[in-house]
Image 1: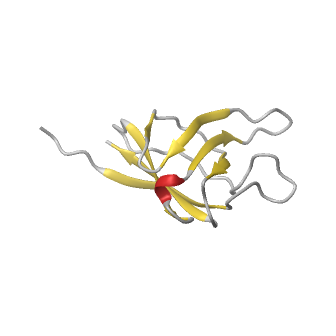
Image 2: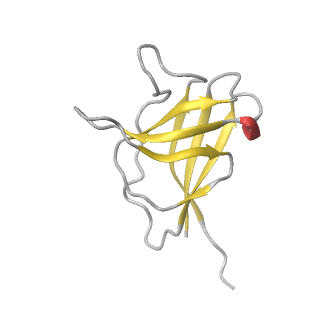
Image 3: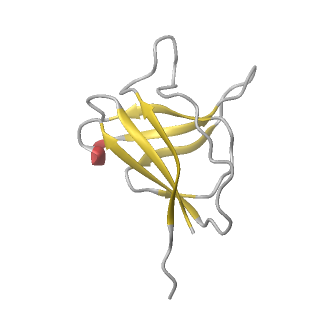
Length: 109
C-alpha cells in the first residue's frame, strides 16, 4: 500500500459573498495548471470564515467575452474533486461563511 502525497497547488482568499459589482465571483483568480505528475485528485480545504464545515462554494472558470462555466459545484471543506488543469479559476457563490475565508487547493498523488 502506498501513501498518498498532498501538495499545495493554490491558496486564495474569498469574500463571504460576491465581490462588489459581481454576480458570482468572491475571489481573485487562481490556477490548477502545472500539477505534479501522478495527481489523482484535488482536495479543497477551507480556513477561517466561521465554521469551515458549514461553508460551500462553486468554482468557476474566468472566460473573457463569454459566460463563465461552473467547473466544480457545491464544494465543501475536505472534498476531493476530479483533476482539472485550468488557468483562470475563481471561488463563486459561497454559502455559510460569516466572514472572508481562505481556500487551499491540494494535489493528491
